[in-house]
Length: 385
Image 1 (cartoon, rainbow, N blue to C red):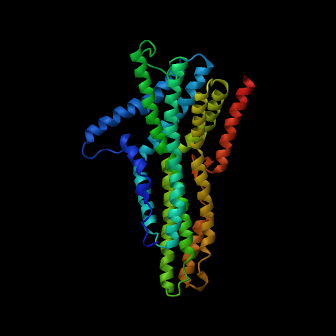
Image 2 (cartoon, helix red, strand yellow; image 1 turned 60 degrees about the vertical axis):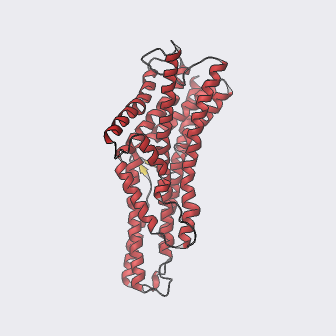
């Protein structure tokens, strides 16, 4: 292990997030602050606010059920995406604090087994979330534009989604091109916002669960090295208690960062998925649209699933941690060691679940409940048909 390069740290894992936040204007350029502020205002007013606004305003003028449902398939997800984006923006200082804490925990890894677990399990688990959303975002962008192009050549030219414009986009070629460019650029901005908003929680929970596992391994080894004194063993235990408190701090900070956005996502997920399924079943008329809305439905599901999955992984690892503490050689240690171990065990007994909004315990159960809610929306629509 000593001859192998260290696996990527926190900075490398979240490089995509900071790059997107920089391009979206959340991180001010130190050399050109005034120019960057102007860029940030124009971009976010025009697309982060203007894009969902033009969709929601367009909903007021729609008459047919098909147009209403088509608008809802994008307007509700985009509105939620914008709220999640601004919620992380206002907590960007906490994002920095969380990553500093993860860096401290990363620096504590010093055993070959820990490095192996970090390289083979923690890093791949975290990157799976990011790579999945790369596929979703790129696939959505490509299929949406191709579908519009193919439908336009085969049937009639139309916009991606019915929405409000201060001019008639079908009155001239220039008007149509301008409206289409606004919608495609706005969609790309929204996809970038979704990429960082929806992957950050899952990746952080994966890291948190992984570090809990490593801490359990670290505690379980204490007391078995005969060359170490009882005082040295006690110092190792105290270091583990410090790490344990850092995990709790990461939990609290992550809840502050993504809690509100995740709460809104859970509340709206059933409606969004239900509307997309209804439109897919009753109004999609060609294979290209089936591909697009099938991928879109998959994206709606994946906005919820990774965070719920890794929240469950987080619960399991924190429950294991309590039992790992009794695996150390505590019986042959001094009184001070045993007292510190009791304190650590009592802390770990306060099982840490990931709650948002004071209502939802985030795990796979809430994910399945969300899917059931989407089925209920579909069932109601079938009954009313």
